[in-house]
Length: 259
Ligand code: MN3
Image (cartoon, rainbow, N blue to C red; front, top):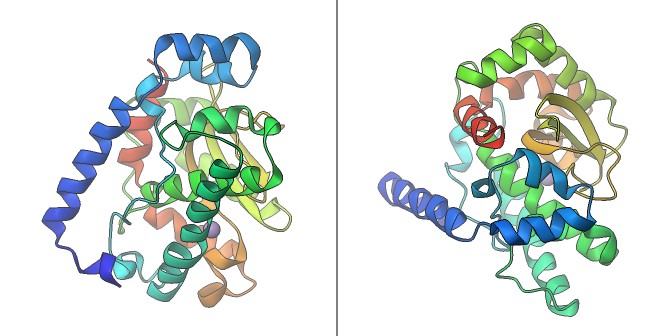
């Protein structure tokens, strides 16, 4: 619980520092060019996504809110176990895999994900697991969720008819992912929004994924994300989860992605 005892002020300060660090560690243009020349998936980043979005580290960041903050939609015990056990283990294991496979842990995780077929199954599972959870925590905030704004709102209406249309398609992708995995809203190389899902800890940045794009929003549909409160009722968890979406985060991510 130590992470939960820090003040709101120190959290805000940390988040600000984190954003700056992400920008500083962003890939350079020449690095992106090198990636794009031999990797189709990299074209999503090189063609459609600002380099300031690339910079997820190998280290688990503090949760940006308390374990209790997402109640009643996600209970505190689920959050504590999810963050401090499941996600922390992915973070540890991706660092172990990086050491074993001579990957510089000061590099960006996105770079590894785009070439994940070059690495071990341990790297695939844990680089994906760590990246997905780091994004997942930021995709949520204490209720109420509000609504998409600006360019994202227009794009959602254009692609899915309405916010409700988006929710229906996104929930279907999440419900229909058999077994463990994730559902995603992504922006593709064509700069259009798309909804899809991936199995296990794969994600749409990976060269091995059949569903590709730059992830804007993701929902974890592994049972560990919801079973304590919702048991087998994944659909109820998904419905409740929409109350927690941090649309400001998603909108900012989208606007940078289409620059
Ligand atoms: Mn999880």
